[in-house]
Length: 460
Image 1 (cartoon, rainbow, N blue to C red):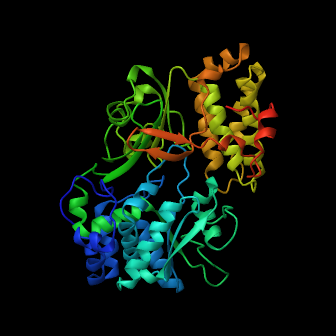
Image 2 (cartoon, rainbow, N blue to C red):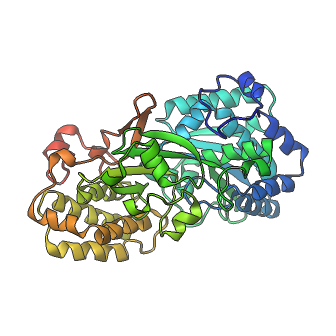
Image 3 (tube, rainbow, N blue to C red):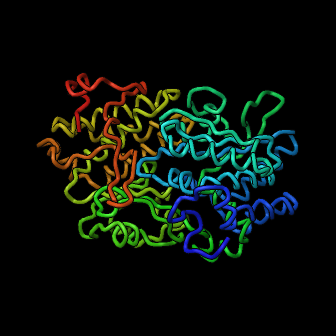
């Protein structure tokens, strides 16, 4: 591919397969087909690519493990997690719309490298533009004879948070509800049984797209951006109390201040809190100079997550903000683990009382206690995230709870759950789902009239 200022996100959509080939598309797969599969994995590992979906696990190690297990057990699968739903995150959708070919080529490279039997890209049915582009691009590539293109299926799934959890994602591909399994995909994969574990590799859209870039240009070129331990670029989202919300591709190691203040337009002195998704502690403004890479965030006791940052200024009530985050997790919990479902519902109800000015001093101890037990026997990371969120707010903003003992949160400073449905790139407006407030813990939606009349479900 020609030299450019980006690795993944072109300024304009790639309109056709011919246009993709003209800009160098196909070079990665061509190189992969000419190499021994083990050497393809070695190249990914040498590049230092780490999963961009949240955990930052080394991609080459994951591919190596699935390839070895599949070789031993007879069958392996490759899955792309395109069910983007982490609050504050909006990057997989533009990648799929602007350049679906790069993602699909990454899937083909992964199938070749791991000897995968079949590949699946699982995305939400409501992502209609992305879904359509993926299907059309896949069909173009298959008709043009791209190796393994015809062995990739595009699967539509529900608009549930847990659809993005990799074990639940496999359930949806198999035609079931998004209920997390106990065992990870690299051990028990798609359509597994007692004799065929079918190890499955799951990577997100950004990771697969990076794999294409690496095979086309080489590991050394990939390492020219980012840091030694977190090389390459990453797509970051910034939203909330900022002037220029949106998604931006930046070298890993770029400071949080650059994203939030220099690009997003927030004034550092006005920043009260930042969240990276809903699976980690609150980020305070004294950490604005923290480099956005996996090591720096881990050393600070934080998680980089999928790179989606929601900013709240000093006008916001941190109790009400937290009530939205915890209520989101309470709703999205699948209910397989009682401690998770009941614990998050309890915390959500207590926080709602504080928001209405009806909390009690004893409730603070109750919230703290729930953070210690909400993770009991958990199948996924959801309750771990809620515990981290709740505990960090109690420790960082005790005065916010004291304020709510005396009076409710003012209406004018209330916020919605930061579930992004759209980003206007021209205006920088990030739209949070206006209907999400009606969602109930059983995943249904309350009628508007019933919701507005229910004191336990305040219309924020």
